[in-house]
Amino acid sequence: MRKPLLALALTLASAGSLTACGTSSGDAGDKLQVAAAFYPLQYAAQRVAGDHADVQNLTQPGQEPHDIELTVRETALIADADLVVFEEGMSHAVEDGIAETGTGATIDAASVVPLEPSAESREPDPHFWQDPLRMADLGDAIADELSGIDPDHAGDYAANAAALRADLEALDREFADGLADCERYTIVVSHDAFSYLGKYGLKLAPITGLSPEAEPTPADLAELQDLIARDGITTVFGETLVSPKLSETLAHDMGITTAVLDPLEGLTDADTDEDYLSIMRRNLTALEQANGC
Image (cartoon, rainbow, N blue to C red; front, side, top):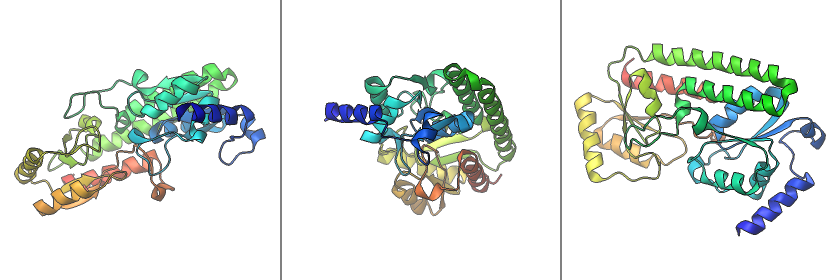
């Protein structure tokens, strides 16, 4: 099936039948075309590119980036992109699409942002965007790449990256201040996607591992129950793109509450008025309430 899909995608791209959302083909021809593998990368790329590029997200709202399969349209977006921003190991379908159809520049976020070991597996944790300062580093790398592709607007890209960094440094300070004096610092979460919050003193206790589809063993659940009882934990955090069944069951068994801590791997249809900054601040509020900060 892959070869017919690839041939059709390349035909569509070369015919110019794909235009950026909300723009005419004439408008799109005046702008760079940027494809981002999933939402945090799209956010950083859009902030830096500003009006000089159409930035398309290859993971649609409600999809989990680990599991996406590219459509003909998304394969063609990669083929036609001046720049593709992705993260190795996060979306294998995007990596395959780049290898098979990509002709433009690429940025692998994992190669420009230092990754830390996860809380549980000690494997590199791909969820670097939970640290606002690492997101700022990605923005700088995108500005450098776009300036090489489009040197006429290099000053704008640098200014946009600086503005993004200022917003992210302010967010980093909000997290540091908001979590500076809490009754407890252990958080029970749906899956191992929040290791980078450790910089604020939080200790992660995930129900599953790096993959949200992993299943905990009875021994894992027993350890979490002991931890909840011992540390006086009040909340089990679920998330937005996976089933809340495990977190709700654990909370129910322990007689405590549930809340949402968004790993920001992607948006949902309910997030149309939200962005990276607002969702991260919503996460901060949830953490403060749960941990008595």
